[in-house]
Length: 279
Image 1 (tube, rainbow, N blue to C red):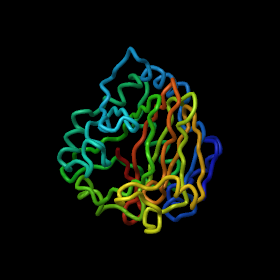
Image 2 (image 1 turned 60 degrees about the horizontal axis):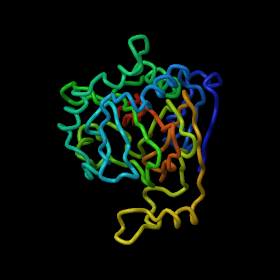
Image 3 (image 1 turned 90 degrees about the vertical axis):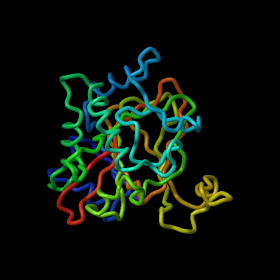
Image 4 (image 1 turned 120 degrees about the horizontal axis):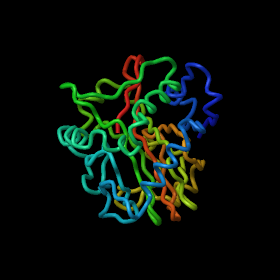
């Protein structure tokens, strides 16, 4: 487990944090104050109000401990309890189009959330251009989602090596699929819990302990056998994680308040000339 932490003001010109994650020099990169903490914090507070419902999607509602609330798509680019094998590419693109701009609208007309995400990622891309992933017919993928984990919820131990899902059938051939990088910015942190916990266990390691049936990982056995690190982030902080390579989870939320974040995935193209992002 290797990580790097720095303040946004200390990010060198043309820093290549994304390339370093791909090369295995780091598994996690944390950039403090990467975004405007006041702007993100205010949006987080508003979205965490019990009197305001922006239209949350709840694809994991069947599993209450992992009932993440999503804004920005009704068909996320990952397996869910609603769609354990992910959705089709067409369903994903239709969901992205139907919800286009809804997450960004939460920031108000004076803040270009997608542009800010692109600009922050560009500072960490080693001089490469950063672009939103698009389908062959030109339709855009969802640029980011906002996610809310309320009191008592968590994200269990998993990895995000999702390239075999149908929704990646056009995108995966364009990418270096050695890993998939998750980017997450914090809007609001909970009273306790909510830490990102990353393990030295790799997604391609057949020896990682699993529960009977082989579907889920055996968390106590993994924690006994592998090193781990915990990361606490505040409003405006960004973390990049080798989510396709490292097993990770989000600790159970103790609130109120909730844990509110925005983010998605990114990858280098096959030639390592561009960074594409989506959610």
